[in-house]
Length: 157
Image (cartoon, rainbow, N blue to C red):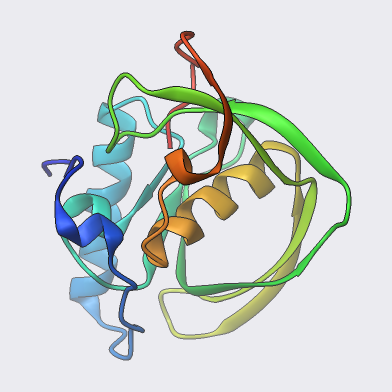
């Protein structure tokens, strides 16, 4: 799949909730995971492939975690403690910067069968989920950069 880049307007729009859980959703998730892997990404949100729906995939295979999808994710709790870390984005090539985000979050989401789950995340997992949920709300990480960097992080979301 082709990754949408700025200034495409879909990247700035709040997405629609997913109401239909069928084979086409599972197929889309598989394609998104393949696209994320091919781009050496660690996360990919549906707007980044031109779909304005509340869906993202997380790909932290390099940390021993199988890739997974979050359908209609919501961050319900954020820690007061924040961590600064460099971020990049597959939809904003060549731009990197330090972003301050909560260290720990609680997430509610649905799986591909429409079943609800709730879990806590910290470290890189929490950061990637926050970055992708921002995409679903039409927010790009560039609006949260506190300091631009010239580096190229190994991980792009």
